[in-house]
Image 1 (tube, rainbow, N blue to C red):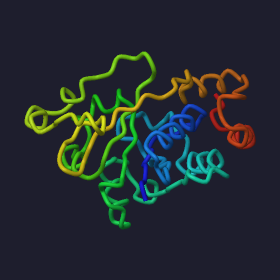
Image 2: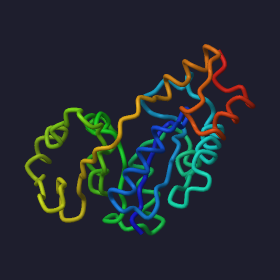
Image 3: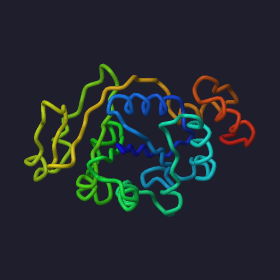
Image 4: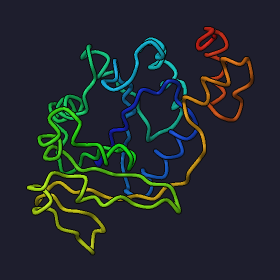
Length: 215
């Protein structure tokens, strides 16, 4: 199965996340996309993040009924800081072939991949789908990598991807840009205003019921 990993804090999950995942799924003919809420993101202030079990519940509610979307608690069960290399390792341990595994991330994130834990190993473990909004300037994918890796990367015109080796590739993807962010949603909630049509209805009801994000 062609499997996508869509990791994130999802604090909270919103329609922008879901639309991005749906467009990526269609463009790359993925059989399933796993949404993987992080336990503790390594580069974010944990005081602004609601508990992991609440974020996991919101993701489960958001994707309920979608035949191609699934929720994974692998990072939460792992505990501690959540690193993408550990996430991918765990998926590979479950028997998924690395040539059929696709890690989904934004272009701004890929541009900082050299700051990630064990990024050199990560770049050998799976394929990458790197998303960008229409009209936005694309990064130079080679320049995001250290010099020794740049020499190995070749662009494959037929597959429209950057080949790192014979198995792992980086696929640029253009997706619809919805001007929604979890940070904006939290701000709206702290002001006591409605988040209707920014998050799925079930997620909105859950947030109201639990009182998450109240100032």
